[in-house]
Length: 424
Figure (cartoon, rainbow, N blue to C red):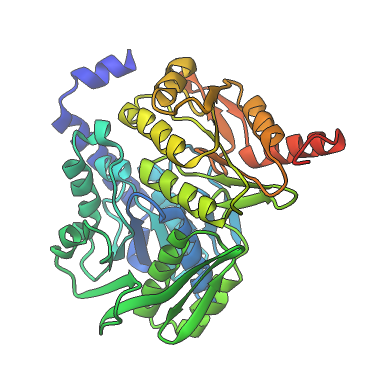
């Protein structure tokens, strides 16, 4: 019934409804963002990690900081998990959190800004000081109608932000975001020729335990896997520089990060490796697979557990995810993720369609993880994608069942190890 009402309601009315709620939320809490330096981070991938990195740099610099992402909410020294199944909080909650940040005497707030949030005007009446663009690839196409409209939604953050824009100029979509006016613009790039006004990372090297690169003759060594985390760090460094924070402070904060929950998080290190990552877009999944494949010894295997979300969330990409897995994975297990009101078997079949003969389906996600661990030999890597640090599986009617890929890995690995059946 609710979906029918939405379908019959004119779009302009829905838009004004969301706009009105945004105003009411801001007014109720006294327009708190006017008393903060608010930084919005948008893009397809890397938003949560960039927010996390930036909040740590600000804290290292002595700033009282709040941050809100799909991973967690943090206000000064207090932090708690984001359990909303919503990256960007609703209009009233986001203003409430900003008010709490002001009450705790925070000076800075870092927000993950999504295209869905922008469609629902959640960014309205937030006084953004700085907008950050990480990267862009096709996502939420069915929701927006086209890639161009998806990009346009992302661009609205830059329209709303007049002071400073920070842009990844390596991304093919950078020219679109460069067109919006701002008092100041800062750019970052990787492995290019250093130029004035561009924070450039050079000598990017993937390590077994992380990644390293050089910025302004300073070597940064991250304890986080994957070259894309170097990009996330470079974005955070550029924002920090725009706030007058010395590179030495950024280096100290970034090098101290041992993990970002559910983002290339290494749960098991030996005798096999088990990685949990949030990747659910084709671009993100391919980057995860290429990174892990490049770190594997020649005789070892990459074992992949993946699925796709239901609820009308970009069904077009399901076979694409399967095709990417076929290209990089030695063994593939297609499993349930967040089916919402859809039939999980149907979703799995759509992923399976392009996954090839090395793939098999196991609907029970715990059993899928268990079977992946059983397949692993010493030196192999198991990677489980799609949910990261999320704490539930979403079913029809708003029902959720408690879940954490990371805890399930730990539990199943311990059971199998006791039985002498894991990575022998």
